[in-house]
Length: 391
Image 1: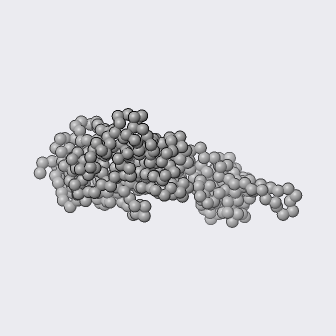
Image 2 (image 1 turned 120 degrees about the vertical axis):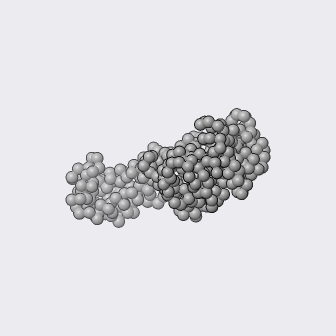
Image 3 (image 1 turned 30 degrees about the vertical axis):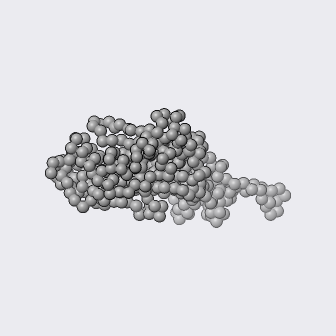
């Protein structure tokens, strides 16, 4: 990146911070702060181990330093500005979840567009929120678009603040479905059957909440699709599972057809074949419904995370808080474009042309000197795909 480009980005970042009111996180004075300045060369230099007292007024600091990236710690400390983690004296930490489109299993790098990657990431975000709100009943959550290729969720319920890394690891394992066993999803009760001298055990797959409900949904969706097929097609679908031959497939189909209402209620003891089939859907539920979070971020009680309201130096988009009831409608490539950078054009020399999707319009940008809407030019310069041209 040329110095002219860095200088322009620094100046426009400052203009943004002059016009923007930044809301700091709770207990901001107990957190470590860090930032990355606009330095020369391909590498970056992190300035960290700063307290808010050392930075001064946050908005004045951002306007004065106009940093490339700004971070605060998940952890809260008695001495946040100390030079080592042991000296900081940890008190508690937010529980942080990071979803990055680059690392999602359903994203194909080089094929999916930026907008497609972010749409896939929002789907993962909604699955994560389902775990956090429904399974764990967390209430104090803050959802943030990272400004780059994903989302952050900050959980600040009192019940989790003092959890150590091992207990945070258990939460990670749960939302990722790591180590999930089918037997954990089954409830057993002793029932006395009509005409039976001895009671029997009834096994029920949980249908309300948790991985049991997710497994049950996967199973019922498959069975309902199966029952719409003719017998020959249905048997072939079942034979696609390892270990299911013609006889077991036919038995499973008949049991599903004759006992659908009971299976919908969670009863998987209607037939051995149904029980064996249901067990396979626990793995399917994990594959389709898990939240593919960046695991080290959640277990790290000292993690630095982007400041909401700040600008992302790799995109010139805003790291933006999203109210819970606005997530579905949120379009990061529109809603995170800073108003400061809209309404006029600037001259740039595009070094890597191609599709640019910011601003709500996908446009093909060719290489060479040209005038572009500033928010498009800022994105290209921040991404290293353009240099500022003299006006």
